[in-house]
Structure formats: structure tokens, C-alpha cells
Length: 284
Image (cartoon, rainbow, N blue to C red; front, side, top):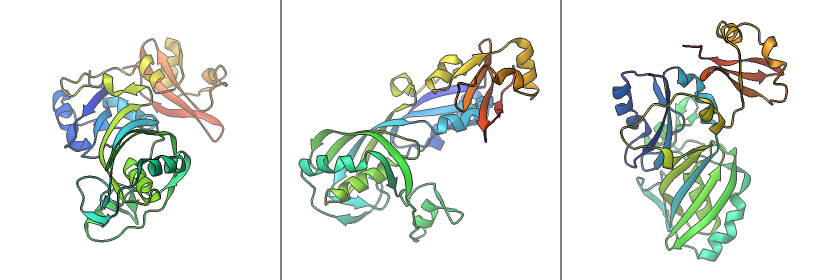
């Protein structure tokens, strides 16, 4: 089997891209990709898809995530992490001040991504521009922080828990919390503990195993699913009209998975009010 999902516990100190190297070697294929980068200094859960399962990337990429992070107050680095150079310093705040400002960063907020990130500015990666000495203008964008808690205070460090939407930068959150508290700060460490219904405790650091995309995985992704007959599966595999299937799924808002037995054969989604194929994996 060369198609499926791997729950990988990425170690700090290697890039997300490098973390895939051994997986590609073991599987004997280059058709391997992760569904959400972890910075080099960060560790924790990385969801990896291989083979035909890569067609499902978009639905894994946009999942909510949970993190445990440590903010270091008193200095801000250009990368907003421990690998950067200090660009500003200030006195560390009191615990009460940090607790007071946390409410400003929960709910729907506008966040400016780090200059050292993979976001494109004028057709180039912001990180490439920053490394060349330019100062890319990072436009603020909406993100959602569902929960933000101060778990431990040991000056100049503050340990936080974050439950947030996809696209949220915890490095930016650390910077902004420090500024709001009248200080400067950067993210000293980060651990991703959960993506949708997938948990770091289920992930492996070595001897990783490829899991088939079954109904349990689709449910953990938060996506509903339906079963079809062999004849219906053949029709879907050949990209025929969905009229025969969508009559029974009008209660689904916009996306559902289709299984024939234990095999995922397609994801169907509603676009501009019409049901269409999001991707077709087929019966094989």
C-alpha cells in the first residue's frame, strides 16, 4: 500500500520538508506531502498524505489546530522564534498584565503574519524578501482563536495553550501579546498537539505506518460520509452525474465523502449551489 495517511510526531530541529525524506524512502515514492507546515524549531503532530490520498490535502489543510507554546518576554527577534536575531528589547511584564490582555486575542481577530513565512508578497516568498534585507509589507488577515490560556508563568517565560483556526501564526500571537502587555517577546518553543480529530499521542517519531483513508479518519476530519452500491461506485469513478446520489444528502452543508465498502472513492462538494466532484480516488 502506497496510498494513505501518516500521523508523524515531528522533532524540533528539522524542517517539515526534511521530516518527509525517510517516509519517501520507505514508501519508495515521491508522492508524499504534509498538510500544514511546522517551523523548524517546533515539534508535534504533522499529518502526511501519500499517493492518491494527496488529493485530499485541501480538506486536511483547513482544519482547526491546538498548540502548547512558550513565550519569552523581554526581547523580540526578527523571525519571532529562538533562531532569529534580537531587534527590540523591553522589560518583561507582570503576570497580571499578560492575563489582562489575553482576551484581546480570542475570537475573530486580524493578524499580521511574520515576515519570515512562506506567504507570497508581490509574487515572492516573504521569507526570501526578509532574508535579502527587504521589509515585506505583511497585510493583516482574519483568523480565529477559539481558546487562549496562560498555563504557567515563570518569568520571563509564559506557557500558553491555543486552539485556533487554520492560518493562525502562533509566532505572531506571541509577538502581539507581548506588545499589548507593554513588552516585547518571541515564541521560544511550540508543540502542535491536535489537528481536527487527530492527536499527537497517536503519532509516531519512527517506524511510521501508512493508514488507509477509512471512515474513522474521515470522521476525525469532521466530514460526513455515505455508502454507495457497486453500480453507483462505478458511476462515480467514471465521473457521471451526481443526481442519483445527492437527493439523499441535502442535509449536508457543502462536503461529504463517498465509500464503497471500506474504500473511499470520492469527495463531493457543493460549489455555487451545485454538487460537484471535489476529487475522485476510484475503487483501486
